[in-house]
Length: 454
Image (cartoon, rainbow, N blue to C red):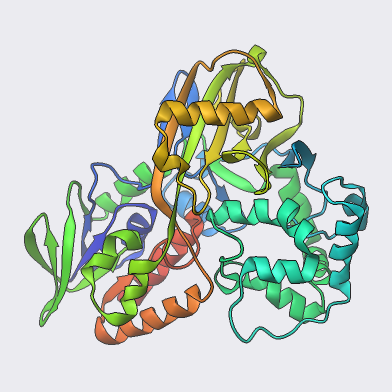
């Protein structure tokens, strides 16, 4: 039986252990708990996510895995409602029919006050700008500016897309994040035409998603999924070793020597799932130097709980994102108690603000009390809130958002080929490579496990 070290007990590491076959597995985790960024806090009837908030339903692998480990009945769907953009010091509803901010219906787009008449005309030019084949990677910002213009990009698309990656949209790689937009544009001669065609292909699916909500959660939070997955892989025979710090990996004749808490341990195969900020110091190979320079963004969430009587919020929505030209510290806010019925006891309101943009140091420069104060000052511009919260929780995720800058996926493919040739049986994977969402991490984990299963 092959002996495998999985470095990191986050969602990628635990999922890799689940999908591995015929292996003696050690999961080496530096901290004293599984889950990595995933962390749920429960008290007094609240279920509060301190890390990722949910996962997207159309990426079905996470639902399939949850069902396989016995949590299918615990899955909850978000309450649906309007999403908003805060721009020009005001909340505007995201126009109906838009996909990631890209208009697919004329009526709502013409009615929205988010764009000026000139901005709308410029976006409409997308119908007439002939696509050029993409020979090299470009930034998401450059692509959308060309297709829809500056105003549509900055007021509508950038707040939605950059929120996913915590990235500067003018550096964010199109090929690494949304290559489908370019494919649709080339196939249909226009981005809007392409997205409209996509919508027509699966109208029933879209309508159903709108009715039930496109995000998924668990009634006891995402941590309950992690805890159950850790339990299942342990029952399958994997050994999770907490407080185990890996400081080096060395290729030897028999496989790989992994230094754990200063002591060497021998393995046939290794799957590395920790962030590039951790593993980059273990390799001096030229192709892997990319990870030593790969940028990250530090972000924080500020969760505040109030009595219902303190918050006047009549909008039937799930929250809002913020245009980057706004004078705010926060980048978005989820009206958690409206979005997730299971999160909040009756008569209470839960708000979750996001702080931290690429290049700023606000998360690093401020203590928890200051971050709460700054977030509250911003929320007061957008909502009518009286008095102090019952409690507030700040969670910092330092250097947690890997920046997929232009050229990223090509470098990743080169590194993967290099690893396969020079380090057979050692796989680097996880959020630093391909997509940061929870289902994406599971997909990468499954692919890594299947490589070793064959």
